[in-house]
Image 1 (cartoon, rainbow, N blue to C red):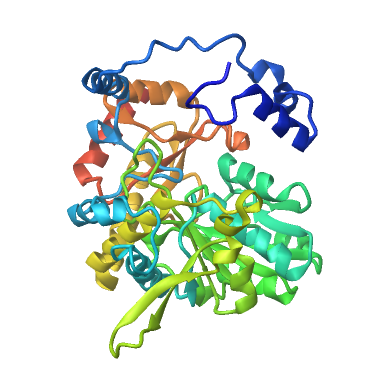
Image 2: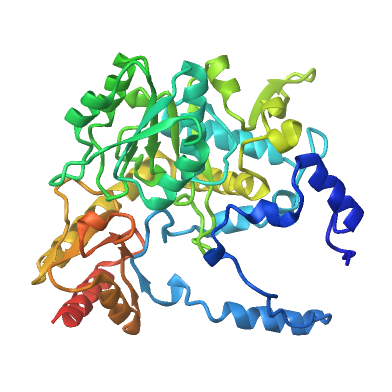
Length: 457
């Protein structure tokens, strides 16, 4: 039966839509999904709750089942991190003119377009690139878009990516590229965790559209060979897509200084709470080349002089490349929330400045080294697993203990351990990825070490 709140649920409208795409039934659309993954029967949905107060209590009860990282000592990371969030960031991103300004142009945006331009301006300085776009969904999406742009710009159909990638990033790359682009993985050195340069040189050729490299990589290792990798790509006419965690760019070389054609990453460390895995916002930077800019299916905001001396206007660029014009044929993944995080990141960077970002990076390096050394001193533990330098993550390997059982025992004692790498990197054995940030004090790390020693005894 048609439902008043479900669009296109009337039988005649549904039939017309199915005919337009050439299928007999809705079931035909779901056929590629394996049967064992599909839910059988009807969902056991409860009756609706019409009273707002009772509905609020019901939802809050569901949320209380979650254990937030703020209530325990957490060392989880792998793409979403518990960094300090200055109060000014929350104050800025909760302002009504930013939260509710979904659309609007020059005369009705309440300063949103200028704020987004200010983000582009300050972030371009951080990564040392000419152009920064409005953010999209996350780091993986940003990197995949730039690899796709490289294919468009070079006309080539092969890309090289590091084998040191978490599974979710591999899957996004597969989604964006695998139907018509060959994606080859370059192995990492088992001792250092760095990309095997000999393997890269052996794999690259004149059919490669782009080489992707990121620092730190998925194993927490700072890929200090990134500049050399960019040079190898350019020697063969390929483009270089460089991913960088912005929280380390106060102490690490910027993607622009390494010669990157595209810089990508995630803004989440810059003033965003973890928020159930949310708060992600992928950035893209590139050089000031019209062809390169127009290959990207994302917004850019521009500043221009007005007829009134000393005043400026702000508006959209690249509008025709986005789904706002292309609609169903659009390929970008972004929206209001990711733009809101851009404004948050601008506030964070403005508050810290170059000196503050340097201090942040130094603190991350120091805490991570201390934690890795203390954990590595425990019997039956190897930490860090790789000799390459780390910014804020490192791999821990147990000689005899199962990662899942260790993590469960730590949770019972009020600590979230690292991410189990058994699915992402089964070759690493009993290994997990631990994250240490500026929220962790020396006492926090010492408590972790003492508790982990107790669990492993």
